[in-house]
Image 1 (cartoon, rainbow, N blue to C red):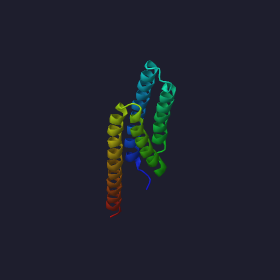
Image 2: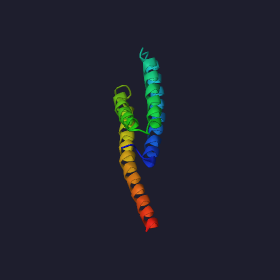
Image 3: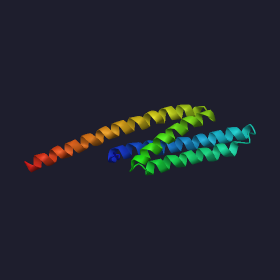
Image 4: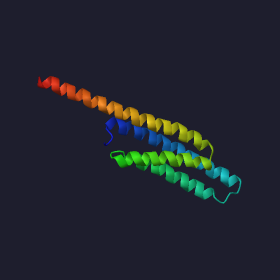
Length: 126
């Protein structure tokens, strides 16, 4: 089943907001690593920005089931980013919950909209 219009809108909004949060988290991790002379500072920055870019790609790919799968991958990678920056565990928890909620409720709303449209067509046909 491909996601409907409402599901895509809700999930895309969540992923775009997550991209912003992840990008800001990448900047924090980069700067913290720089202040402690950690040689991985650049990797933290580019890895975080790549994850933020993946969020945007997933939002754009939501027209197919692969987009939803990519969205789940983004959620797990955001959780994994908590190893580098513990605050990302909170970000992953919040956006993971929002992703799940938007996905389940969006599918429900799309189904109800389709049922309502079918009932209206049946009424017009009678």
